[in-house]
Image (tube, rainbow, N blue to C red; front, side):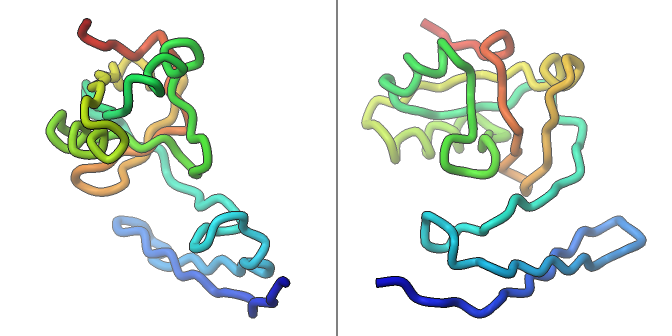
Length: 137
């Protein structure tokens, strides 16, 4: 049994811009396949990333990442951490023995991959090719 949802108005505030507010109308927010997810992608402004970023994951997920790179999967963006401790904390949500991946973010950005600042601990990316991912054995 479905339910209808009223259109949602989302206000996005971006500091350091002339236009401080952008309004996005989400006409069919109830079309989402996950509760709380948005029906459209939030646009972000690319930023220059730090030299390295980190990603914590499970050993099983690492096997797939090693083949195809980091992809957003069911999210809008790949989530990366600014420090290894945070990445390991995230990885422990998926496995008691998380795998810590190091991303050469500056090289990836120079190679045409976009990165977006999420907050002081989180960076976002559209994807990260395997070329820029290392994992200490």
